[in-house]
Image (cartoon, rainbow, N blue to C red; front, side):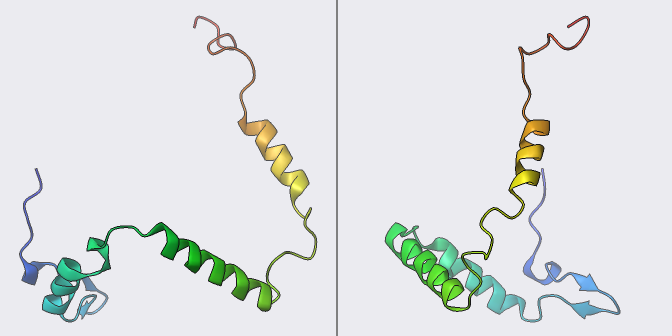
Length: 94
């Protein structure tokens, strides 16, 4: 079992003593009352996805110029990764 780490012990060090979390009390308050405590809202998430899609289209990043670019590679990888036949019949002694 992992013991709980006190707030002052949460600060991880990186490089020459730089702290990853500068204000641990603010971080703890955000964790306790932050958006992670909110229930998922499907309609809101759908609006966010639609807004990101519209932005990508307005920037010219979507749809791709060639819709079939990379399709041959995807098909090849699918053929390699998909197993054909019954389980265990390809292994002797199985």
